[in-house]
Image (cartoon, rainbow, N blue to C red):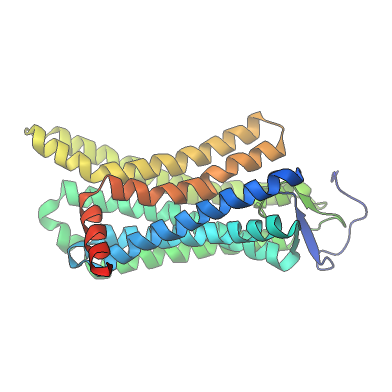
Length: 314
């Protein structure tokens, strides 16, 4: 039985849903607004700097940095799907979002979440070829192949987001739809639906397994082959150099999947929906914010490119 049910209505008949956000305390709203505005600005600035550094420096016109640019663009889009609306609601003390706006959030949130997973798998494949087949690297990972891999990632992500859109758009909700989250999370919408969601639950787990689990298996396989190849190298310096080229990517993978897994585990252990929303901040905001720092601090090429770009500007 739907906990917020008054009377089931036609799903096309509502004008808005309510996003309850992270806190009901009015005194917390200015602080939350300032914190999330700062984090969002860091996401935009950090990822844009990565993109500009790669574009402006010819030394970085390689497959690895091409994929990194696309990951940064995806991270910006991923956060922009949810954070600006939350900032508007915090500033205006409003909790409303239209039905169409909610469907839009579901669609683009799913699109860029899937795209992040697939791009991380593509980047793992890039490192696999670079380390295990260095002499054939430029032949295998050609510019045309790179573009094709990114386009395929976007296409499959679009299919995943389309499934989420069709799934949510077919749900029947109640008159007063209060979402205990700061964005329209598909799993929360399933919990609040007054129609039968058994098929939808199976579908959402299936899509999650395909777009989350399969890329993760690909990453595991790539690093298994990478580690096996590196261990056969006799020189310690060569081993360190090979591992260092994977360090940033591996850190981002651990951060992205670690926070996602943490949110899933916290939702199964904790009955507090508001705490689950707080946990979701980790992968929707914190991870895209930290990614540029991980790549810039652990990568000499990016650091040098950023310094050269700053010197040209100043």
